[in-house]
Image 1 (cartoon, rainbow, N blue to C red):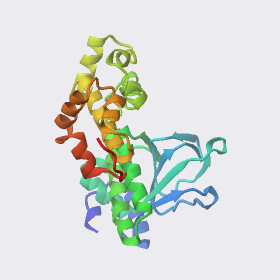
Image 2: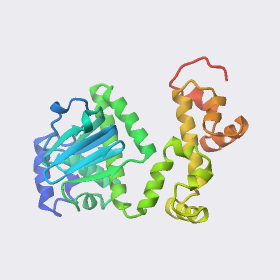
Image 3: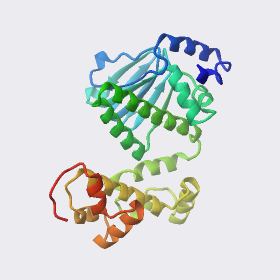
Image 4: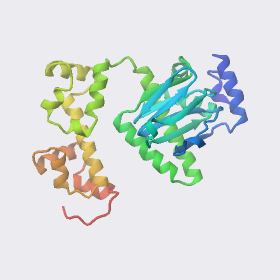
Length: 291
């Protein structure tokens, strides 16, 4: 296949993948919802993206044990032996996305010309965490895929796989972009319990003064901390408008805006329509609430 032309000379590993791929359907991809551990048997002919949507799991490998919490994804090469178990026998929501060698190569060619080099610069597996918004989008697509008919599920599974592989490549490229303290700060402010707090409290989450934090944030994220928090709050408001029966007034209060008019102004500036218009066009909950 043409998609292997660019990489098949780089390593004998790719030659073996090409042979493996020919034994299967060239562009196979599948998404599996794991709710029964004894039945979990990953294919040794496929790459796997194991994503934890909720809870915590342990993965026993030959040389180490990995613990994956919510929003974690582990990328495994074909043939790597592993055993999966839930932590403390608790429940967890886990998805397994299996991708054939040919399809993985096609995805990598679409993401970046260096993508394959980045993926195979390490051994066995790669672990990364999804950002909050990316995680929500993944879960949304995964749920739709699981409930879809066979043909639609195949199409959606490709989209899920491409999305996760893109994030994996980005995480490898950006691994040294942020210092640990900044990554921890980002993880916190992506949670409602923090981004709905007053800015004075948010600044306390970082080990630097307000001016220094603002400087770092601008440098690393390309925008101000205030604008980033505003986006998080409006995104949260969008979810409430779509999935809850709260009135617009209640949502304005819940997202910590001092007045309904201020909330409407900020929302329309960010989204391009008023909260009421957004609800009419996007609501999942059908109700007759008067706003």
